[in-house]
Amino acid sequence: MENLTIDGKRLWDSLMEMAQIGATAKGGVCRLALTDLDLESRNLFAHWAEAAGCSISFDAMGNIFARRPGRDPERPPVLTGSHLDSQPTGGKFDGAYGVMAGLEVLRSLNDHGVETEAPVEVVVWTNEEGSRFAPAMTGSGAFAGVFDLDYAHGRADVEGRTIGAELDRIGYRGEGCGGRPVGAYFEAHIEQGPILEAEGKTIGVVTGAQGQRWYEITLTGQEAHAGPTPMTRRRDALIGASVIVKAVNRIGHQFQPDACATVGMLRVRPNSRNVIPGETFFTVDLRHPKDEVLTEMDWSLRHTVEAVANRGKLEFEIEQIWQFDATPFDPDCIAAVRAGAERYGHGHREIVSGAGHDAVYMAGIAPTGMIFVPCEDGISHNEIENATPEDLAAGCEVLLHAVLEKAGGR
Ligand code: HGY
Ligand code: MN
Ligand code: MN
Image 1: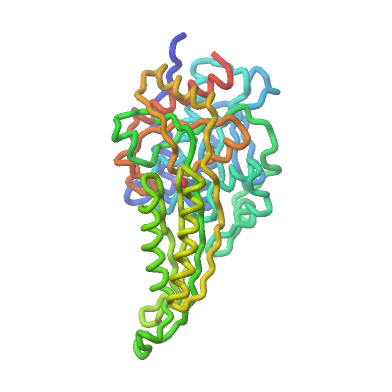
Image 2: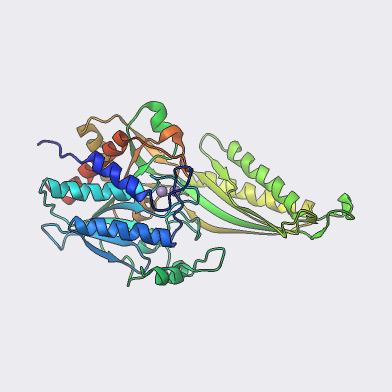
């Protein structure tokens, strides 16, 4: 049986057109979840999917489903997709690639006149990044039953605007969320790390994702005048935070070769140059492929925060706001991805995802697999994020194969 082809130029052109929405001067995108720019990207996707003959629906979390009918409408659909929301200094490909690759699969099935046994749906998940609204992956998490709708709708940004209110504002708040059978889920994504490029491999056969924990820490000292206050009488919340930031980095290095530890956000109050900081708020992101090591990292973090606060006469609060365990993907889906790479002659290797993806939550309710392609210098969550049309097309071909394997069709 000949290999069905996809149209790599059409895929690339759709990515470049989508990247115009929220385009930044440095060549990236800023399309925060549920902003007007996210709305614009959603509407463009829906327009393209309708033009490809899909019926469009969206649920109570604003997750969008573009459904291509199959011969058997009763069979659970095969889903593929990713997200269109980005980081504030995000790249053109993180998320958008998985959505556009899914759309290209549908367009290619149309081109070849292929009818699948099961319906196929391309999905756009709401708020995968967790940048404007924490935690991440709230759309797929609600669909998979990890978050209840009240919790997810109540998550607020720094201005106090909630996911629920923003879904109402942009007109993407549907009814119900999840609770329906899914035959299988595949997600194509750039690796966002250096491994595939370093080994000259085109396809990452993703076997699962590492575990992840997010914390919010507040240190409270005492605001005082930067001039008359002697150094020995200060309760400086920024000094405390700076010691803990260094300690977080040390925890990452201590649990090598696989641990990651990051402080990404830090707020200082009152943030005035001649006032000793009375309060600091900062976030910690810990990751590791083994849950038992994550627990050790957690203990080390908590112990450090308490010791630093006591030494600096600071009050402290530490809250773990989110976590998911290391998540293995489905062996048959992994095999389908590997078979696709072999069928199209693409060099490949197994890989564990360092990043979280909507596939992590989908793995809890359906057989799930992911396809990685390289990105330049392994850089992502950065406006210079880049990938080649050839690699993106290769990943899309493999996605086509995997979707057909699960949806049945020729
Ligand atoms: O944080 C992550 O790994 C993903 O970008 N949400
Ligand atoms: Mn992503
Ligand atoms: Mn991301």
